[in-house]
Length: 142
Image 1 (tube, rainbow, N blue to C red):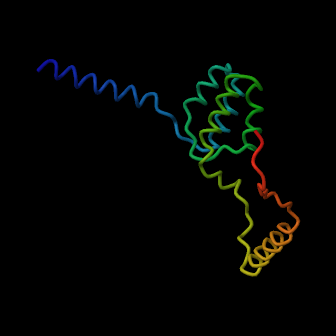
Image 2 (image 1 turned 180 degrees about the horizontal axis):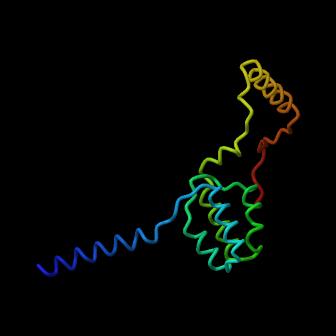
Image 3 (image 1 turned 90 degrees about the vertical axis):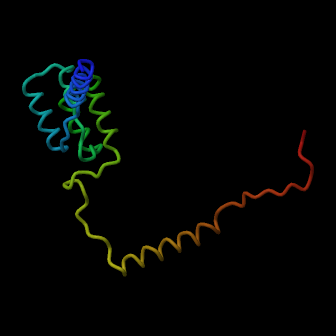
């Protein structure tokens, strides 16, 4: 009976330890606010890097935003590398809503003009490309 209690206690401690190290999920705006606060408090680079390492973004950290956030950390610092890693990890997420283009999709007439322009380009370009096919009329050199 005692070994079972110890096993249950170990499982409970392991689950608590795994949730304690879990990443904090936040938006890019929240990340910017956290970095602004850390910069204002003059936190050491290692502390900022550790803080960034514990973050999981819910949005993509775009290059434009990343370069803006780089002003809060040193150019060749641990925090800078952690920020770049965070940006790489968020590469497949959708960008923040305020970074999406505000233009609407083109109407049918505009889409048709684009398709026709692409057809014309391909038709004209193919005629100007060099013929790169070779015919071997003799035996290869040895």
